[in-house]
Image 1 (spheres, rainbow, N blue to C red):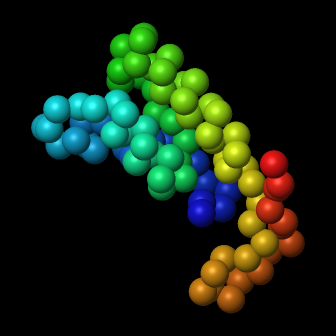
Image 2: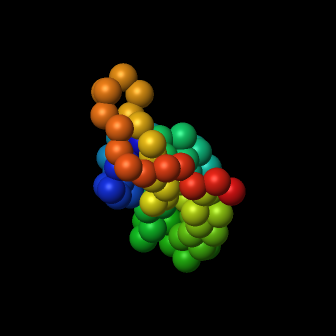
Image 3: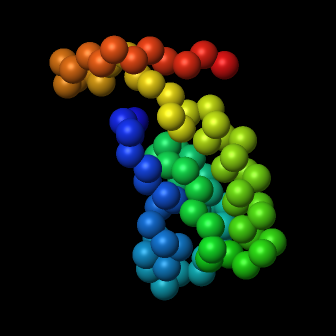
Length: 84
């Protein structure tokens, strides 16, 4: 959960893979699992289009959603979850 914060991808793909072969599907799956938005500009046109359209459909479900509470923190905001 990232309150009012934008984390793009998992850093640059070079940082994420650290010299290992780049796998866009692994990168996108990890990005979604961590609740981040997409990272473009590293995959070439075909890869960037894939990343854009894959992340657009998932990010709109959680990006900018307001949370009611942060579990374990005792903090409660005035925000409520957006229902889809």
